[in-house]
Image (tube, rainbow, N blue to C red; front, top):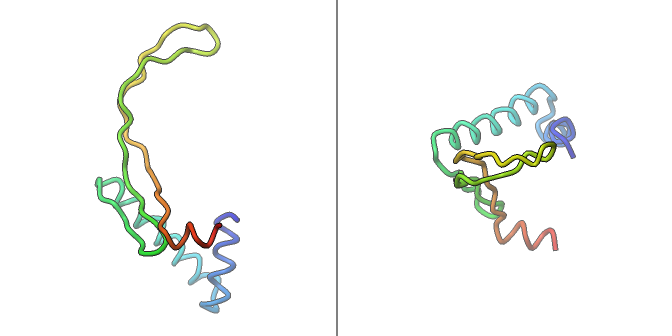
Length: 89
């Protein structure tokens, strides 16, 4: 399922494709904005979005084999909730 499929499913409930597209975009934008601020987003029963730090490390250029320094960075993380886990099983 991609974003267009999700909009189609939500539009079946809302009755308007434009409202559904705006709603889905708003949810994604709000989650991304919170993560950018370093805040977590918890959706009860679904899961938790958060920001995780990857430490600096030494990597290799696959083409040349030369060692390179990979800097510390922040990455988004999702941890599924218990209800979601049970649905998928």
